[in-house]
Image (cartoon, rainbow, N blue to C red; front, side, top):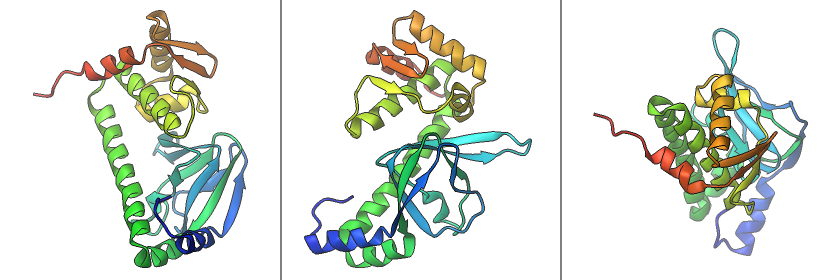
Length: 221
C-alpha cells in the first residue's frame, strides 16, 4: 500500500477491505467470465491464473504470491478473463473496486499507487510475451527463476532459496515448454552447478550464471 498516507486515510483504506476470504488448495478465487467486482490482496498463499484452451487444456498465464494483487484482469470489461486457482491454502483481502475508485478520487496517492500496480502488470505481461517470443528453453527457465526469487526477496524471503508452489507441468504451460523440456533444463542447470534441486526446493548457487543465460540472447535483426 502507498506510503505517506495520513492516519485518517489509512483508516479509510482499511475500511475498503470488507472481508477476508480463505481459499483451499485447488480452490478457485474467481472464474473466467464471472462479473468483476473486487480486487484481491493475497495475504498468504500462492495462486496461478489460467485460461482453458480450445482443446480443453489449461494454459497458465501467471503466478501470484503473498503481497501481490490479483484480479486486475477484470477491470477492462467488468468480467474476469481467467481462472484464479490456489496452489496452496491461501487467504485474501477482498477490496470492492468501486470503494477503491471512490477513495482514489479523494486520495491522489492511492490513485497513483493503483495505476502503478496496473502498470507493473502490463510490464510483466510484456516481459512474458518477449520471453515466449524469442527465448530458448534455458533462457526462459532462467528468467522465470530469477523473476520468482526477485519477487520473493522483495517480500523479505531468501535471495537464493525458493520452494516451487507450482508443478513442472504448470511451469511448462506458463513458459510455452513441454514438461520433458522443463525437467531436462532443470537437470542441465544442476549439472552445470547453477542450481540445486530437491523436489520442489530450489537453491540458486550461481545467480550470475542465470543472468548471463538470459542476457546471452542474440539481438533481433
